[in-house]
Image (cartoon, rainbow, N blue to C red; front, side, top):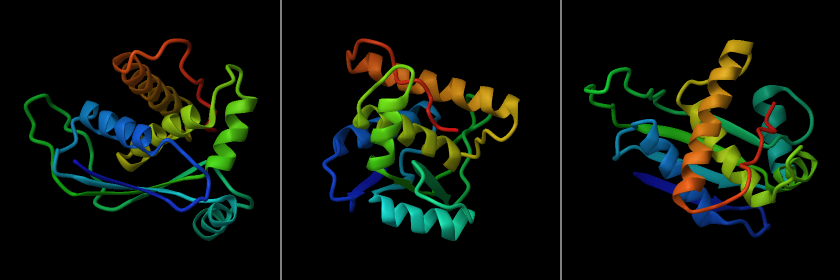
Length: 165
């Protein structure tokens, strides 16, 4: 799996954890091992510009996903996953830090960025949270992936609660 993490934010983030959790999520979702993903970490000004340009919404947001080949997880265990370009995930550490501090289970900026990375991966794979049933499915899957990754790394304590709306 080819995953590039490019930090353009000026904020120090755990790039290795972002890479690892993205790889874990893609493997868990059975995405072809030769697929490609790009993760870009930007400051609030850049994120606000993207948020206005692509969503017509003011202010910076936490995560945005830009799918390329619209890859989907295989629907059957014996189905061969397609190979391709997943797309780009854009993260904003300043927003992540605020969300982590305001969450019911307070957590670090890096923990929030890990959660947001999984959230972005799921969006690239076609998951959404506009409707209550979609939200339940996506956030349940997101929690299972983050919990599984944390468990494999031997991380203890509660996983970050979803702060993405």
